[in-house]
Amino acid sequence: MHLSFFGLALIVAILGLSLLTGFVTTWRRFSGKRLITCPESLTPEAVDVNGLAAAKNALVHGTPNPRLTSCSRWPEREDCGQECLAQIETSPEGCLVRNIVASWYAGKRCVHCHRAIGEIVWHEQPPALLAPNGSSAEWKDVAPQDLPALFRGHQPLCWSCHTALAFRREHRELVIERPRRTAAHPVLRPTTAVY
Image (cartoon, rainbow, N blue to C red; front, side):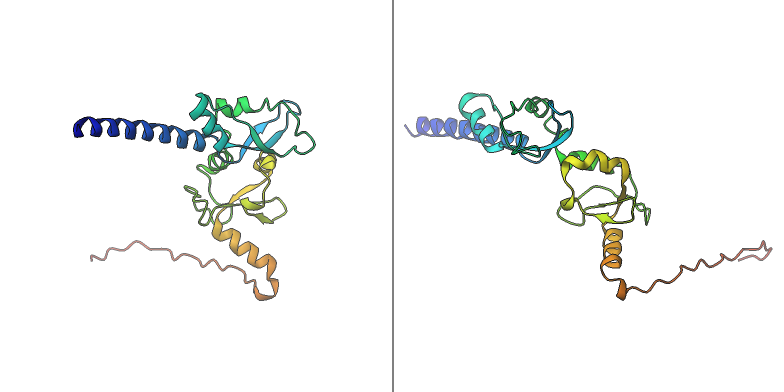
């Protein structure tokens, strides 16, 4: 009797784990800020999908049936048919804002110090953008729907250079500008001495 109870408990546990895994996978697949092209206006727009509802629908009905919870065109166009969801279902990772930004930075160097940007760690010293007018901006201050225009006109800036530029801009009275001296490198002369 214990063996059959144990077998039944094991089956229930495996079934529960697979359902939970599917729920979490669907929720993660549809969570996060996305950048899509609005089918109506043909402009880039930022949207959020209700990932929790999509995961529940997938669990109960077998299909996620995602719905938007916000759009940069709302509230004016909140009654749209949400045709943009097809873009998200086709490429959920490709339209995720953090992936788009990371892809733009891939292989780039800071415009000031020329160090490689490297892999982005969003919660710790993320890179910034340098505008044509010399100001810099952090990603939390950038509207996702403005990304295509920003990518055309801005340059990559590492966290350290962004912090230094922001300090200079905000506390001019504390900054002393000194011209950078470039010392001449000594020229080595050929010698016959043996070391």
